[in-house]
Image (cartoon, rainbow, N blue to C red; front, side):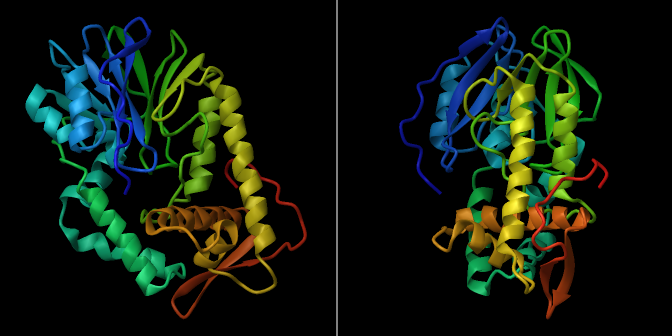
Length: 339
């Protein structure tokens, strides 16, 4: 993991009345997480950043006076709610989170380590050599050091309406980046707090899931279609700049995944390949353990989507999952939402 370089100055930048952003430095490749303040004075913070000294320092120095009563987490990644346990104690605030990610987050960060082997074995099952899987798992252990796990006071459900910062927000569950990612949408003003669901410059990593039957890309594209249907005026993302035309950006991300699926098929020759081999074909063999974890997960997610769409066949050989193209030479075209 990288150090926090060029730490942003503390303070709230007001984006519009009652909505501000704090730029939280994080010791991860994304470098900065956007923490949104709702209300003036702040009633809520959406995504508080990781439990890391410089991250907490910027957050604390930015919130002056009355402490927020609620900390909302869009999803379970440490750069978004790692500090939530700390601020819960210091501010006396409640922590709200989507139901699915609350459950999975507890199991991954706070529960017994009985399921740890599932994460390790998932990478080996997709062809990652033992040393590589071990290094990848080492990254997971370091990431766990960036969270002070909170008590989840309220579990948010899809379609639920909540009042924070003088606005009414509708909860939108948007699986893909995680199985239970949530966005908040102000229908009256067309404002979307998009977390990592929609980002302005990069596309969020869509990775491995141990949830039985969950197809990450397929679910993510369904989520994106629903998001496009909101016709939001503006989106405030978890990283990067404000998105002034969220619907256009959503369409770009959908197109990106179609192009990536086509690239996966180009890499696949007449012989079956595993996810690790496809990842090497996509991004080469110079990735560090942190990058390789994302690369293999993304490759497998696209392969599973292609299998669901009928473009590859998924089988197992000696305990390793392999994929074979069944429509060689054809350019991938996406089927229906339920395909």
